[in-house]
Image (cartoon, rainbow, N blue to C red; front, side, top):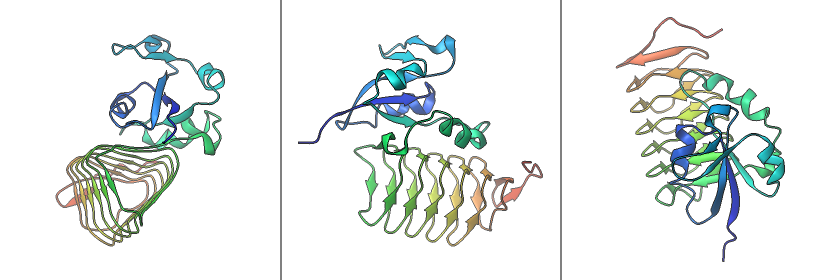
Length: 213
């Protein structure tokens, strides 16, 4: 019988609340950790929202750290590393309805939501979050620190480098390279390589001329 492990989720944000539906019977949620004093206390579902002292107080708890949004995803690496959590303590949370090939490789501190399909030989890096109903095809590589929205399709042999954001409803053609730090806007149809640190959007997706520094 699988041991039920205690779990802390950081921060108290949309992805964190959605993760409640994903933990299944493998984890027992102790509560959330958040740096914003106004969020701390008890949430409407009765779960405690605590400050970072909870990491030490519940030292046996696994940690799922899933900060980030289209506006803040580029600081995810700094934020997660700043928690000071040992890599082996991070959790891997996969919704019971997600289908992950036994030939796929999944890193640590990964959240895979309902209806996601990950097929043969795909490699999902550490500290990534994949929202509902996304399909990641064979031999795709998703780099560490990346966020993938809902209803995204990434075709075979595509490489998404570190710390990218792919907006919900987007499609990425096979064999492409999405450079590190890039943002793909909602509903985009990507048919050519994406330069690192750029923002693209549209059908076909095009650079909107706002390159991150």
